[in-house]
Amino acid sequence: LTLEERLASYVVEGTKEGLIPDLDEALKKYSALEVINGPLMKGMEEVGRLFNNNELIVAEVLQSAEVMKASVAHLEQFMEKDETSVKGKIILATVKGDVHDIGKNLVEIILSNNGYQIINLGIKVPPEQIIEAYRKEKADAIGLSGLLVKSAQQMVVTAQDMRNAGIDAPILVGGAALTRKFTKTRISPEYDGLVLYAKDAMDGLDIANKLVD
Ligand code: B1M
Image 1 (tube, rainbow, N blue to C red):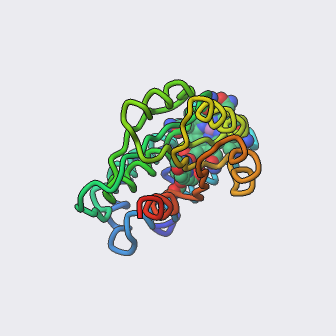
Image 2: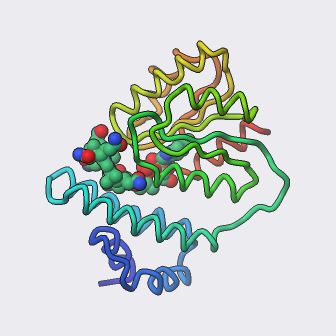
């Protein structure tokens, strides 16, 4: 197997044996983020495909998730850091009913490496908790992540609850459950502030930078 194929296969097989030396090898060729977005994400996509075909069980997907998390944890130290003063404060949450957090945590790393203070509320976060945190932290924006089809609907509910609570801070949304179109036609009409869709973590950073400028 090539180095890239090996990296994808650690994720697919859910094994960490040999992972770290291969990640270090890959860093000679690629940036940390390229390793994540390239071979590791390719492995995750394959996991999703196999899971969909009932060729993997949840316990196996969890092991794949562990490999992805360990890889991101190792690669984080090699990511570019912008040491400038705090640009803004952003709340992050995976919406109610959804446990997927690898993408959200990647967004946290990218944003905090680039001057943002992140309040990460974790997974399965109900709207009330987001509203409470927003008020307590006086955040500049709220980031919602969701990977399940039902999470897209949950974002609509979350936006309604936030509007009812009188909040109109910008909302950044992302995760495989969403599309730009869904964001525009379903979430935005339920909210008074801006609702912006990010296709990946770097896109999330670009949008956050535009918001604070
Ligand atoms: Co789940 N799962 N899962 N799963 N899982 C999916 C999402 C699924 C598509 C797999 C499939 O069937 N093909 C499917 C959803 C189907 C649907 O609703 N249409 C699914 C399912 C069905 C389920 C369960 C229901 C399975 C079950 O129990 N029967 C269950 C749900 C539990 C729940 O949430 N209530 C479940 C559970 C799990 C595990 C716990 C085993 C594990 C998650 C572990 C964890 O996160 N700690 C897991 C995993 C790993 C996946 C797949 C395989 C991979 C997800 C992932 O981590 N990708 C996934 C299939 C797939 O997506 N290919 C699948 C890597 C990650 C970096 O990408 O999160 O998309 P992602 O983030 C991207 C962008 O989306 C974006 O930036 C990142 C890249 O830079 N982004 C944002 C994300 N959030 C953002 C927020 C932003 C901006 C950008 O701003 C705020």
